[in-house]
Length: 307
Image (tube, helix red, strand yellow):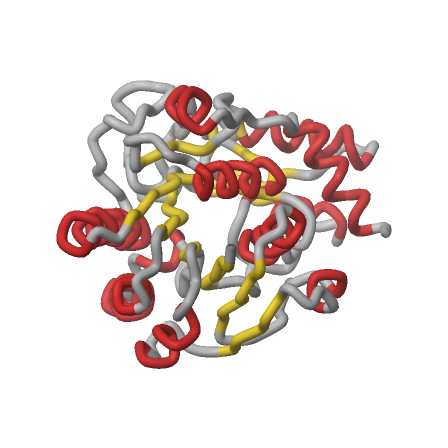
């Protein structure tokens, strides 16, 4: 089978490319700038094709996905914390870009499309924890609103055009290849500051709880979704357990074998106090469960920096 990964140069996309190649797929990697984070081993694999293009180029997208069985849509051009500053740009890049991908998949008669959505932002402030897929969706940032809108368009294309669309609401992914100088992702931001000897900045008192999932478990869920033959079309993908930011600091300190300095800042309006996903549906339907505890995942990430 041939799979297309839209957003292949990024953190999740590059690992998904590895997973698809290992599973025997022929893979076409699509992104604006390639190879990006795609591994050197993957780049030498004859089953991989690199196709640099913009999501805004609908014709090029259609040509790129032609003849493929499966499309993964992972591309995103904004961050949750910055999206509220320019919602119009968020819509222009993420929502309209995703529609171009859906239309290309429809025109090319792709059998299945798997979209990576945001389990951390689409629900908003939780009414219950862990959060099931049936929970109300009240995002507190434009990023989450756009992700939710894309989900709805995936369902619409399924209804109108028969495109078999699946949505995975992924928690906070972390792991090898994440940029430690970036502003997205608590784990790489904290680790980067710790390694540079800077204080770790926590918005609030450290009691904020998040759901952290190692990248290998994310890829396993995506591959399971590609094979899935049941009726469900929406899945939470998380660790199933919450970890406070203070607990994360302690785990990082234990891994680095030293106490870490923390700077506490005023809480931000768009940060929900708790986000832990209920993953029973994914476990039941996809036969998937997370395998890597956070302490082990942090160890792998730190070890990769020394490799």
